[in-house]
Length: 189
Image 1: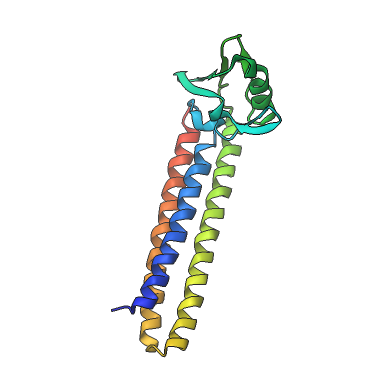
Image 2: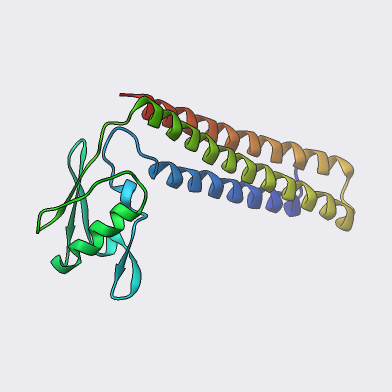
C-alpha cells in the first residue's frame, strides 16, 4: 500500500501527463488532413477594432462539403479582415469572399505535403512525450525527497516509482496511439 503523501504525488503526475495528452490532441486538431475541419482555422486571429480576436468570436465556421469550409461572419464588414487573417495564417489556404461569407476550398494534399504534415505530427508527439517524461522525473524527485523527509520505508519509494512508471507508460502509449491514428488520417487520400 502506497502512503497517502506519495499517492498525492502520483496523482499530480497523472494530471500533468493527462494535460500533455490533451494538449497534443488539441495540436493534432490543427494539423490539416484531407477532410475539412473547423478546428483547422480555429487558431486564426483577426484584427478587429485594433485587437487580435479569435475567428470563432466573429462568425460561424461550417463544413458544407467535405473539402470546403465556410465562414459566416456576424458582421459583414469584417469579411475583408477575416479573409486577410486566413491568408496570413500560413495554412496554405485561399479564402474566397463572396460578399456574404467566405468560402475556403481545401486543396488536395500532395504526397510531399502529407509527409511534411506527418513530420509535424511526429514532432508534436515527441514534445508530448518529453513533457510526460519531465513529469515523471519531477514526480520521482518529489517522491525521493518525501521519503527522506517523512522517514518512510525505502520500499515505499520503489512502489511509488513503479506506479509512476506505469502511469508514464499508459500516457506514452496514448500518445503513440494518437500519433498512429493521425498519421493514418494524414496519409489517407
